[in-house]
Image 1: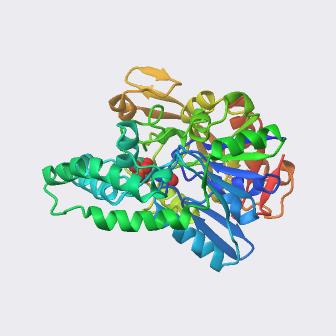
Image 2: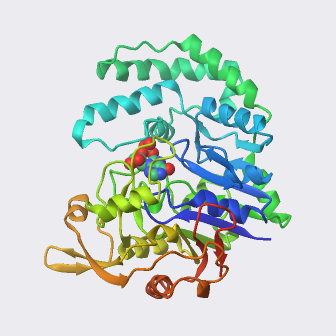
Length: 421
Ligand code: IMP
């Protein structure tokens, strides 16, 4: 039995989809525990490309996908993904937590309105209603999966919540009247379509653990977007770190045996907020083009920069990462020189930790260690020693600095372009 957790160590888009897919071959369950359809996980199998936003990646391998209570669900998107996969010959095995909160139409309206009002101080959200849905969950105004399956309960909840939401929408000055009857019809219809999947996933998962099943927890976004440990307020609204999995799926921390930190070989970020190693030059453009750094969810170009060890020290510590999976190493091919940030210069101090104060973060100047670049690498490389010497040196440095072993290296998008160490 193994219970493994896969999390992003940077600002999301680290290539978690491919790694989860890779590990899923041995898993019985693949579990999402936070986030919603703000995530975008791309899986390439042969010539087939699958882009999933809410369905756990493991369903592509025929595994049972679990959407835990910590996830926020847009039922329209989820039903669309189920239908799309079914059309492509994959009938997803899915379990949805009855306690998961539902993204409602007014959440999406409010996400857009808040961003618009913030103007050039906006967060740069995906406008999927994620923040407003989590806010309602915490302020106890949420609607949960279980409520969709019972029209009377749903009606009662909507009667309580909608007047408050309408008031907020009016204050924002948006010309929109929430149509309660329409929402009731549409969302109870979603409930009927999803009801066979909605269950007590926490009980199912704990039984699975007792029965020695293999379980993969699939993190979405990355540590630097965590609502507590990320670049707040430029974060998402959930706990993207390892701790989020136990709350977001209802399992005890003692069950998690390995915590795999996904590290993209360079750094990217989409949306606003500081990115200390950001490159504004031709190298940044090179990484963006070569790495196809455009959002899976919003198609926005991702900002690119060098690998940042201050970030990685922070994220691997908070989550107790036990092994590293390096992704997109091949994107660095062809660069004359590559750099890794080891510390920040903050005013007159050199620091090796990530500051909480966002104005301090904005002032941080990266201090780099330079490495010689390398040319192309063999796409069929099977072991580290098959990689160019300079690339090996780059990897060794990361391993030594973080004191965490690298156990997987991805050198291309395909399933086979992976080195297991
Ligand atoms: P939200 O999650 O839509 O509220 O967006 C908050 C911030 O998180 C924005 O900067 C988004 O660009 C970022 N974000 C949300 N989901 C992802 C993701 O899956 N990958 C990368 N960035 C994300």
